[in-house]
Amino acid sequence: MSYLNMESVILNLIAGFIVLGIQLFFIDRIIKNNTYRREQKLWTPFRIIFLQGICDYHDNLMDCTEKFNKSIQSKLSEIRNRKILTQTDVLEIGQIVDNSKEDLDDYRKEFYFTLQTVAPSLQPYAGEYCDEVMYFEYVISTYIKKTKKLFDNLDINNENSKSHFLNGVWVMDSALSMLIELRLSKYKDHFIKTVWKKEGLHYHQGDFLIEEEYAKTLQMERDEIKLAQIPRNYPIKNFFESEEEFQERVKKTGHNKV
Image (tube, rainbow, N blue to C red):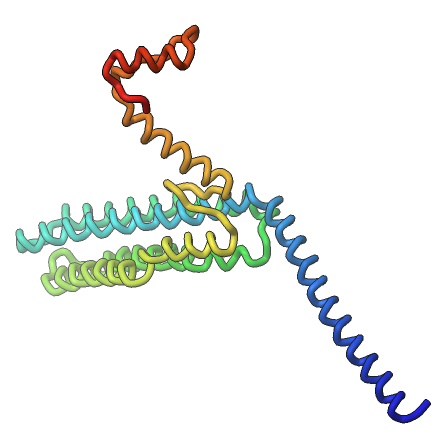
């Protein structure tokens, strides 16, 4: 065999291996994609529970924070207008903090119960979805604890101590409000878009739905709108009437065909 023929054979072998490598790569991708879709379909009920739990927890944390902020701001405004801090005020602020902590504990238990329920079916990447909402929980919990600590150094008979206490409560509340506004309040919209892109699930009216359920829900809503537009005195079709007889009766009543 000549040198040129040998070189041609080697080049053909290399080209063949390259083509084979490309084919194996695409075959591997197809197998992995099919496996992923199959696993995703089997995991769908648990995915919905898990993802719904994250959204619900975020909503609860937002409600908890909003309630805490409004109550604190209202109480601080009352004290500022009155220009005096009483023992009753201190007790009421303490009660606001305690109530918020209890609400947060209840919401945390509810979310962790959801995680425990779906844990056996969670995929490795599922933890990425929890990052922000668990950070949210940490932030609120930390601010509530710091506000509670301000009570330890409060001397109700010392004007400087009372001013320091009230300033501290105001700063904690204002900082929390700012963090919520700048970062955490935007989380849910981003999360819903991410879930739609990665999981193919639609968030509609507070629930995650698969494509088929989402389409059915939209159709039902359209049907409800059409039904609502039908006049209340629109004739009801008699079972024994033909369609022609019914439409004739409709015309006599002055209604147009819907």
